[in-house]
Image (cartoon, rainbow, N blue to C red; front, top):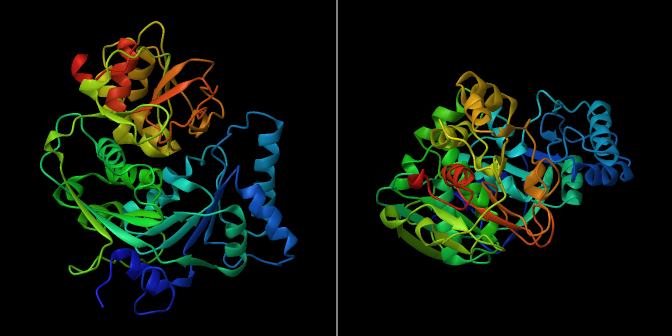
Length: 419
């Protein structure tokens, strides 16, 4: 029976030859993760079960990344709970400052999430790991608690939608623009509880960073997971990092999809998602004049070294607008160190930006860049809901790092060709 990559991974982890969309199945997990907002809830539920040990201390990752370095007493208590739990149950993959990065950039970088895995995380952007050819999805904290006890979780097998991209990407057009364009086409509910499978020559040519950006934002279309079949690009990224064996799966040529969409990317320009939904997208040439107050370049969506290089290529020799605040957030300590070695941090500082340690911070309106009433930000993050980055009357515009950098320079939403 022909199967998609999503169906093959779920079948293998359920001990089955095949599965059918709509079936309820129980699967073993390869990795469960939680952060400083969601882990304390999971820990509380775990402790209430009076279980003496976790199912496997090597298969759990606890990453405090939302409010760290701790911004207040409550955030310190949350991380303290994670630290205590990790020590008590000998959980190896607990990451403190100096090791801590934004979880969805950190775990692939460390080789903890791999092709063919089933990964669950108490964070909606866990779907990022689909870029590696894993089935990865966000779940609730209580689901993570149960998985830490049993090593299993149940799913309804999702239908799959196949998205094929062909043509030639224009200058300054990135994976961020492809996924924003796609979400703009199908809507924020266009893939509800379905697997978004990205394929085609354009995807084959994308870097791993670009692929992770696309898989990361599958949830913004309501998807259960985003996924890309592993290829040589995947293996080149994974082999130096993998901390355990893995298996690659690919979709059968005659696999059945609920829907198939094809895009010619040649006419796609850099995209901007206007408030207050990621599907409210426009090409950069049609945005008009939108003054801004802040720019954030970072997050689990666009905080990798390729993203910082792209921003720096626009900011080199430039100074940001006097009315704009520019915040750069490398996603992991290794990315921070590499950006420093390459001179990118000097570019950002010379442009009058500031560089933060790795944190989710402003993405969720946490800290390190909260917006006041009526303020506008261009951000390389993944969501622009009402009040997402601060005051309910503030506005967030989503864009790629080049557009964000150009906007910081000109004080309004702008494309890099204008700089």
